[in-house]
Amino acid sequence: MIFTLGINHHSAPLAIRERVAFNAEKLHQALADLTRSQQVKEVAILSTCNRTELYCSAESPEVVIDWLAGYHQVERGEIAPYLYLHDQPEAIRHAFRVASGLDSMVVGEPQILGQMKDAVRVAEESGTLGTQLHKLFQRSFSVAKEVRSTTAIGANIVSMAAAGVHLAERIFESIAGQRILFIGAGEMIELCAAHFCAHQPKQVTIANRTLERGRLLSERFSGTAIRLDDLGEHLAQHDIIVSCTASPLPIIGLGMVERAVKARRHRPMFMVDLAVPRDIEEEVGELDDVFLYTVDDLAQVVESGQESRQAAVIDAENIIALRVQDFTAWLQSRDTVPVIRSLRDSAERMRRHEIEHAMKLLAKGEPADKVLEHLSQRLTNKFLHAPTQTLNLAEGDERTELQTAAARLFHLHSGE
Image (cartoon, rainbow, N blue to C red):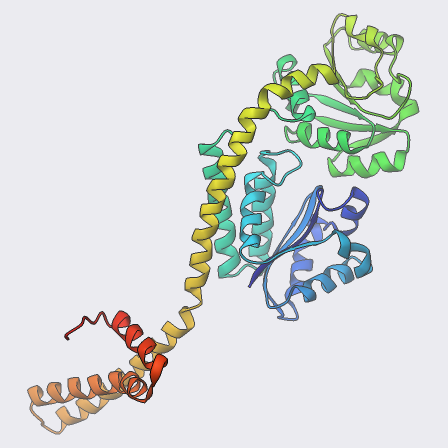
């Protein structure tokens, strides 16, 4: 049975997610440890800043839950309320949605697909990826490609964070070459960081009143953390500033920005103020070389993208629903493999036995035509003995069902 056990930004806060995150350098070891007991046949672990998910082929998810708690040295009761468990076919649908970016904090973002491919690569290297999960992930990648090529899932802007990226791209040729400063460490800043960091910026800094909280967020995006009190010293070093705090008064004043612009020798500075009340004094927007946008500015960009993105999400969900049906049918066909293999093995034993018998007759000088006739009769009798006996002994509804099955299996028609 395939199932998915996980925790993500929908189900748990950052403080819980970070307790069950996997270090990339220790992932091989973790996979080996989980499969050592042989109760888990196949497994791949996807661990990002927003999610930790274990894709498994195993008899019982309870074993995996206990292992996850034990591996991270947390009480099962502490993480259990935040865990989700998907069985077939929901586990299949979930994998397809994750690969397609529909389950991401940033809907439609492409980064998760690369992270999933990395998780598969590590599982393959560790020898924990078998036939079922290998097929599941290959189908997931195929579905993601189909969603992106046939819908507009990644083309429209439906969040403040995405709108911020869109506007920044009007100022800078590429976000990849810019230094970004995020002020605050709440959910909105986390969302903005996910959007901007998907473009691989040159540098990421988190400024927060509580340095430890800022450091926890910065580590997820390979950045650094500074104290909010040190903002004036660092402002000039950054090209893009995104702020969202709960401060009742502005924390970035006109004088601070004027000094930063001067130190930057008038290189442009892009600023987004998502706070209500504002974090950045309104007069800052009047400075040359400063491009300041507020919540209202971004809301206009978002509004234009909502309708078209919603239609794209519906299209993507329809594609995924069809592909889940296809994959479920493939899994069900796998259930007959042992029976087919056993049937072929039995027939092969009969064939070999009769060939040996026929060869002995030929060695004794028996005519070849008689030996062939004898061989064919014996093979036919042996092949049909078990099904014929079962049909003769069956009664009532069982006989009717077996007769129908025999007609289908052997392509029989009435009157034959």
